[in-house]
Image 1 (cartoon, rainbow, N blue to C red):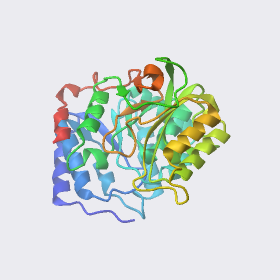
Image 2 (image 1 turned 60 degrees about the vertical axis):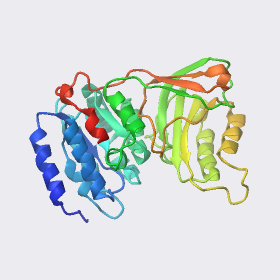
Image 3 (image 1 turned 120 degrees about the horizontal axis):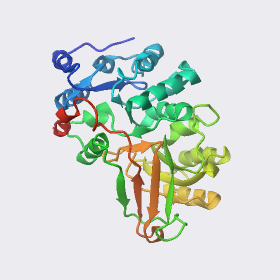
Image 4 (image 1 turned 180 degrees about the vertical axis):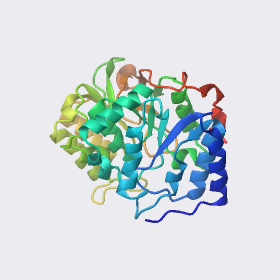
Length: 356
């Protein structure tokens, strides 16, 4: 295992953070996936969080590295077990993912079903916000499947809070989440695959995350069994045929048949196109899937591997309302979720420091 050396800047951050203990909102870092490649971003993110009024329980996890992972499997699993060992009162108010990559699936069977359930129950009792996306989808789905715990597809430590210039839209939605403001967004893009009538609303449990991770969990006990849900999906760097193959896995396994609608976020493909047919693109995949399933499919939801995105609770009730039958877009409204309003020291938080 290779751990990065503590720089003088990191030492200063640790000293400043230590002064916050017992005097600030507790935050716990979870690094179940890839290691953090940019030490400067991590240091910047930690400094911003501490300046904003958080106490980071375990900042040292950003320094771990083993192969492509943020530490050995046993170290990364120990991060989850440390949460499980805490009393409800000892638990942090926020569990924040450091970054994505790959590795979370390696940890899933490191906890028993009873342990996942116990962890979810404790976090729910504390009102803990588990925040992140991408590879964290595996952990979020396991908590929902075994314990019914809602989590948040939202910001990451390194990529978002540690950005040289934090994205104002993304950070404001994280702040809104912390302040208990329910998500309410309007998407103006015309929706050709919404078929349930003008201004008709669909209400159901929003769940999902990264398509690659979610489809890989089909047939395992870590994929929630959600009936009448609204399935949110996003991905990055995948060609259209790969996306369709994963969507077909969800269809053939019966997952899609149990949903009321699909909510598609951003599928960041860059310059990737199909090698055989330029007209076989994401739009073609969506049209084909809609024809196969008959499901309303909403697109262009502002979430995924993009700079500007919302923080969206998963496992809570969402209402989708098509505007003019989808011709003028749609509105997405989430039920209220955990916030920091009643947390000790919340009044000391200065969220503006997260934007510096």
